[in-house]
Length: 121
Image (tube, rainbow, N blue to C red):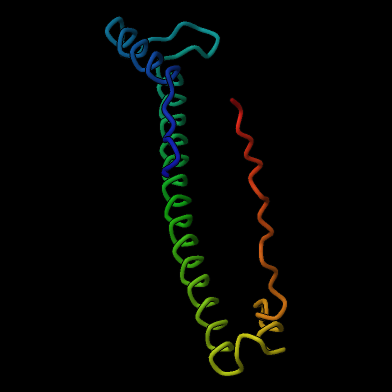
């Protein structure tokens, strides 16, 4: 499942505010380093950071898919390897046990409980 991408309500509000302030004066300077230019620069910085973050998430999703695919391949190969040992040495051999299988002679059958049936009149 893909990770949710990030957006920012603060960024959207700031973009709208910047558009409104630009309609007042494109070179708006309110003093104390409060300029439309610095405001727009910070907006662009946040946009770039969010874009980088979302791109990294996409890369992580891709890596995750590759890992899952490799795990599946490894699981299948592990099963084939164990079956190969069973075919060569038998399922009741020491070699089969060393390879991670449970030899037939060591398997336990499940104990089933008897159903306690009582007939009430």
